[in-house]
Amino acid sequence: MKVTDRTRRVLAFRREKKRLLALGYRQHETDWEIHRGGKSGQIILDAVISCDGTYVYTKIGPKP
Image (tube, rainbow, N blue to C red):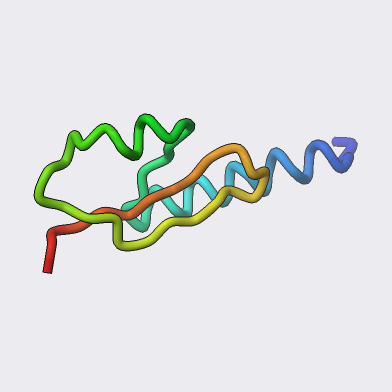
C-alpha cells in the first residue's frame, strides 16, 4: 500500500474520531448543532477541534 500525505491525514482523522467518541465526545459540524439547546440542564465540559479543523468535538455533562 502506498502511503501518501493524504492517507496519513485520513488515518489520523479516523483514529482521532474513534478515540474521542469512545471518551464520550459528540462530533459537531456546525454551530447550530452546538447552540440549539437540545440538552437543557447540561453544559459543555470540554471542546476539542479536530485535527483537520473541520469538526468540533464537545463533551457535555450535568450542571454542577
